[in-house]
Length: 206
Image (tube, rainbow, N blue to C red):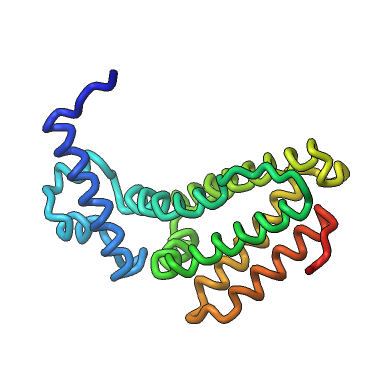
């Protein structure tokens, strides 16, 4: 049986949530470089001493914001992938690519800040590396499953293939983030999926 949260626990959660929400807003408004933790604390309306209990600096706060945004992407990537046929695998992969790229468009404003922050902060760059590795590990597991089911040639090294696939997706994700329109979305989805699935699953374009 889980212990009920005390009023103090609830207040602590609410304070932390205020800081994260404030950080998201201020980073969107000012960008990563021009944002200070003082601005975030002031906007959140909490005491300085209280704020520093939860986050020691703006880098730590931004990592929390970034992780929350990326959870939407992980929800797509972590969908159960247990195809019974190459055709089913290809259909699901194409849908995942579309959902992933659509999230990049949906979160475009904050993802632009994420891109700038990765290039400005070693802490954030390191955390992005952790996020990237988690995606690659998930893709590796999916490829191994397809190989176990004899849907994919075992000559493909799962990890190297997964890493290659992830980096292609990330490259085009940033392209969509940097763009001010969504005209190339379906073309990117189609070409990425075709490249990957024709190589692994041997399914030609329909």
